[in-house]
Image (cartoon, rainbow, N blue to C red):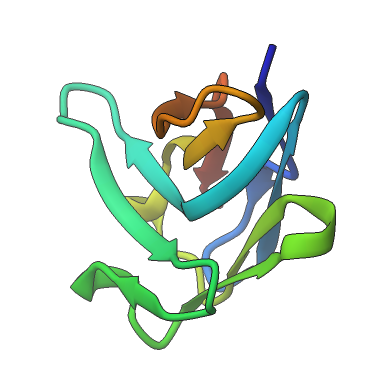
Length: 121
């Protein structure tokens, strides 16, 4: 059984910072891409940032220059450093991983349960 567990969300004032973490656990053969998505009330889920196992990252335009995604392959963990936060960043943030469970030979898409980020004064 593979699980993704996020942490690090919370309430922060505009201009503040938060760091999200997501650890993948279980019987894992290989993790390919890890990423962060977010969903605000009344809106569709959107990609925030994603990073390959080799460290290549891409970001949605609205967070470029403010957010940084990174990963520790040895720990099966992905991070999202969020700086200069704005009220419009308020959303439920989900961790995502494309990974192959041990023994399956097939890549699957896994999601965490979500962590709330609220930016408000």
